[in-house]
Length: 262
View 1: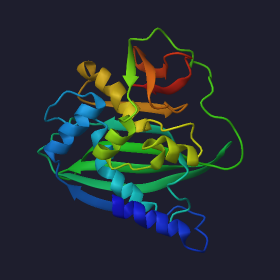
View 2: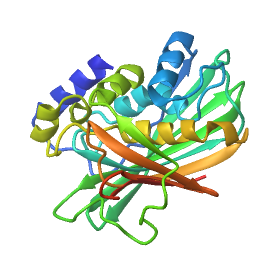
View 3: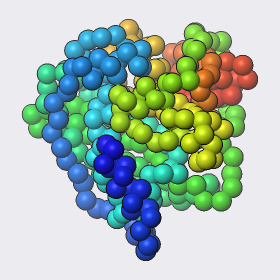
C-alpha cells in the first residue's frame, strides 16, 4: 500500500494531462484472509471476533486494486476525491478459510452539481461464484457547493447509542485497512488538504454501523449508505436505527454524518 501511494504521489507530480475517460481495464487478484488482520479489523470497527467476514471487510481486501486502477492513466488522482456513497451486496456469508477471487473496475462517469462522479465496482467470487459485490461512488469536486447539509429525512431520530470516537480512530483504521489518506491521520495534514481536522474514514463509520446491527443481520442482504458531513476526530456520534433505516449524526448538533438503508 505504501508503494502504491508513493506511485500516486509521483504520478501527480509528472507533467502532462490525464485522460478524459475511465479506463476499460479491470484488475483481478486472488487473496487468502489473514485471520490476525481480520481480528484487528474486527476490534477497530466493533465486530465480534469470528471466522465469518464482516460485509465491509472484502472492501478492504479490494482497496489496493482500486488504488492501482487510479494511477496516472485514470482521469482523477485519488487525492482530493470525496467518497460520497457505498453499496454492498452480500449474497452469502464469506468465511476466513475461503480463497477470494477479487475483480475491480471503474464505471459510471457522470456530471454532478458539484463536479463529476464515478463508481469503483468490485466483486468477490469463491470457486467461480460471485458472493459479494461493492459499489463506491466518488466525487471529484469542481467549483463551489456545500456538503453535509441537512436534507429531507436527515433530521436525527432518537439515538440508540452515542459513540465516543477517539482521536486515533483514523490511524487505527488506516493500519487495518491500508487507507493512508492523510486527511484521516493527523489534524495538520488534514487541514493542509482543506479539512477542519482529522476525520474518520467513511467506511469505518459504515462498518461501525453494521457492527451495531450485527446480531440482526441476515445471511444475505444489501446495505447502502450516503456519506454526509465529515466526522471530526475526536468526536461524539449518535447512532440511530429503525426498521431498515439507520443513521449517524453529530451527538451535539444533529448534523448528519451518514444515512443508510439495509
